[in-house]
Image (cartoon, rainbow, N blue to C red; front, top):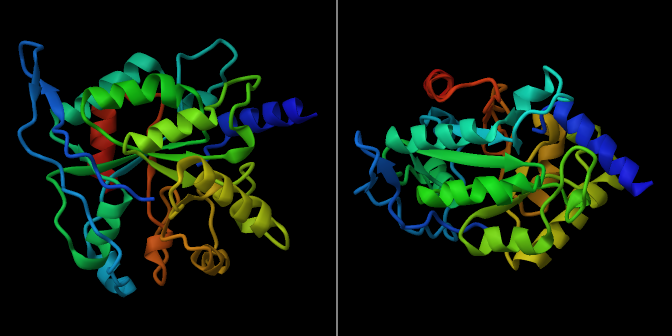
Length: 293
């Protein structure tokens, strides 16, 4: 029964986008020069940020700050004959993903993590030049086996939004990360965030949904990482203003949607991301970043 349930989840996630903080590593990013040799980027990413004393700014102040580009990835694997046209939008093939990340590094982008974004939005704290945040949804195993080594090559860090129902499971379409792999990502300086228990639409939560979709996943992820969960990604990118107080009550600091307009009262809980499409070349991704943010 559970195996069938996971298969249904995986199928749904392919068709519809699902769419602790620890600071950015001080390891310098690398790029490649015209000869193909790897060259160290001499600009050091932002240092560790202490957010403990930061007070939340008013909504207008936050909304007036220039948005930081945030990319949302799902599966990173080669397309299969069974993948549909819509599904391929959320599956970035392995070489294309590597080329996209190389493009970001060659273009001078520096990855930031939630502490830095939080400090910037609330206080105007300085960010590295051309900041960008990379996020990965749904716990897919390829995010550990393909994504993590690729990002390490360039000194990049990312945010991984975990759907706890699938931890350590094998699905019909994809396999999922284990608790040990999630902990390793966290220990290496990446940020782990919550993406609910089983991807239920946030706009439909009522009664025990708050415990099942928020409280229990939070507890499990905190047990795995040993760190407090402060970041949340809405399943399918769908949110409603009525649910934001429930996130605040549980200690979440920021929540991430997709590309709709930010809430005028709670912009920290409607932070915009764009899906990195499987159909996009590195050049198209570059243009989309510039046009969307």
